[in-house]
Amino acid sequence: MPAYNKLVRDKIPDIIRQDGKTCRVRTLSMAEMKPMLQAKLQEEAAEYLGSATDSLALEELADILEVIGALARLHGASMEQLADIQKSKQSARGGFDRAVFLIDVND
Image 1: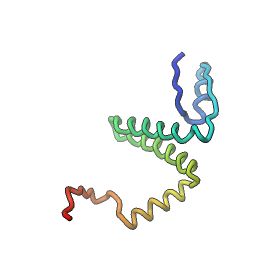
Image 2: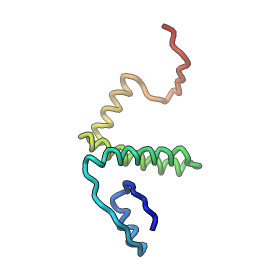
Image 3: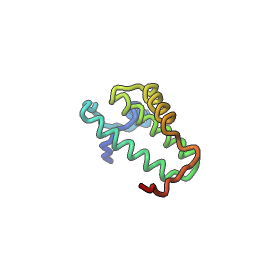
Image 4: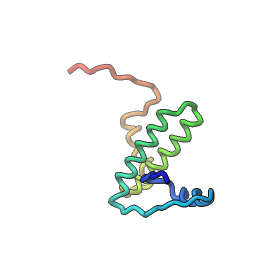
C-alpha cells in the first residue's frame, strides 16, 4: 500500500472507496493545517509549472485557487476579502497586464 502522507481534497477518501479500495485518513489539527496547505501550494504550483497544455494549466490554477481559499480562511479572511485586498493592491501598484520588466534602478 503506497503511503501518501499529504493533504487531499475532502471527497478523495470517498472516491477511493467508490473504486473498491480502502484508505486510512485522519483529521489534521489547526496547527498542522498551515504547513500542510503551504506544502500543497508548492505541489500545485509545481504541477502548474509542468503543465504541457493550456487546459492542464487551467486545471492546476483552479487547484491553486482552492488552496489559496483554504489559506485565506486559515488567516481569518474569505475569498471576497482576499479579492478586495488584491483589487486595492492592483489599484495602488497595478497588475501584470502590460508585461513591464524592470531592468534596474539608479539611485
